[in-house]
Length: 423
Ligand SMILES: *Cc1c(COP(=O)(O)O)cnc(C)c1O
Ligand SMILES: [Zn+2]
Image (cartoon, rainbow, N blue to C red; front, side):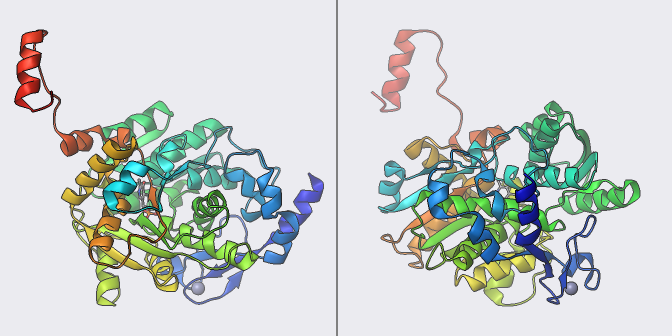
């Protein structure tokens, strides 16, 4: 342990401001660049890759039985001996569902089902890092604002760690997610307003009471947790990098994490190229897609989409998100809510995977990118399903309609099944 501790201090060089480029020493309470401020001064964790290469290798990983994000401990900005919650986060399955492949006319289509995390979304990858960092900084109370999943995952990780949480959610957060919060013992504040309102109020409260801040864009360590999804994709494909990764975009931290993960692997020399990354939003809320398409700074947008997890009119990590798309030579596009509902239906029926609306938005985008000829059907593509559909049953029913209703009579069953051409 002492040996690892010394090495740990060496593998993180510091934090670099993505706006002004200044490098800062990591220290408790430092989340954003003091010179550039909270909005622009987003920080990125800088590693010493030669140190990491001495600590971990692809061959060692092949024998590592830790099926969680902590198999990549030397690539994470945490101390190896800080207590960790018992929850198993990460190492979600990477499927190659043949039914979906046939439907899409693709042979090398993979689905990374991150709905299989402890609280059923990719956000667990960030939240578990948040509670560990909070512990390292001796915090006992941790807070965030969220469209839903960041909150429920934080509440779950904090419960497992024995920490108190204050969670600010917008009034439209789906009931499934609010139920998770309450079950995990969070202090839940339902802000009667937009996500922007919830975010602003949480920021003031965090300042006032000095809670640990899990707001993802503001906290540079959380993207490091999210990047593990990319590390896993590469390892699960035996270090053969896909041509494309498609993922939904709200604040922009998830797509930034995906890019950071592949960047890390490239700099370690473990992969010989990086994938193109496609970021997908809903047409009802697409500030980053609009900025990308029109090659201009982003502007606040309305939040009119059923995909609540990506209904983010004022994205908190816009620059990191746009950099991921630009630097990977990827693309961005928006899909309608109808296309999102169709993707939920098609993914479920063809492959037995249940995604929430934002969870399948990447897949809906892939369909459009194939129609447009941007992605070809013989390319290798990974679609990340970022959250489980049970979180939002209302929209699932919206996607598929109500079941066939019959009185308990065989005669009626026959009539109705025949009427529906089902038998
Ligand atoms: C948060 C979330 C996203 C988007 O992640 P950002 O970091 O906000 O871009 C996508 N899908 C689901 C299910 C999410 O919870
Ligand atoms: Zn700066």
